[in-house]
Image (cartoon, rainbow, N blue to C red; front, side, top):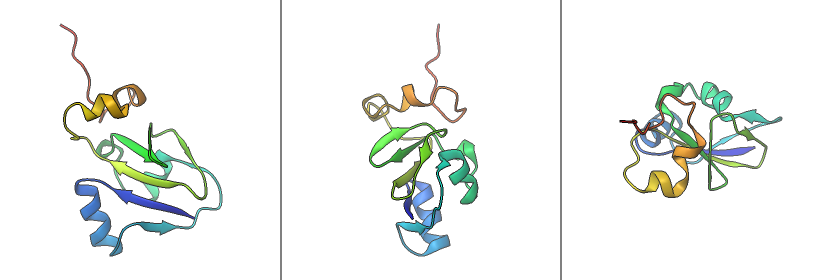
Amino acid sequence: MIEVRGFLHLDAAFRKKYGKIPVIMNLDKPITGAELAEEFEIPLDEIEVIFVNGFVQALDYVIHPGDRVAFLPPGCPGPYRIALGFYGKNQDNEANFKIKKK
C-alpha cells in the first residue's frame, strides 16, 4: 500500500475525485512515477517532479509498497526549484523549467 497526494491544482483534483487526502492505493509490486500517474489518469505534462518519502525524484523513479508519494505540477515558484532539486532531477521532462542559453 502507498499514500498518494497532489500539490497545487492536483490536490483539488484528488479531493474532488477521491474525497480525502492522502489517497491510499494498494500496490503489490514496484511501479515508476510515470506508471503511477497513468493509474491516476494524470497527464505527464501536468507533473514536473514527484516527491517520494519527502525527496524529489524524476518520473522514472521506482516506487515501492510503503512509500509516500506526491505529484507536483509545473509552477512551483522561485528558489525552491533549485533548493529542492527539481531542475537536476527532471531534465528530460517537458514539464520541467528549462534555463535558456543566450
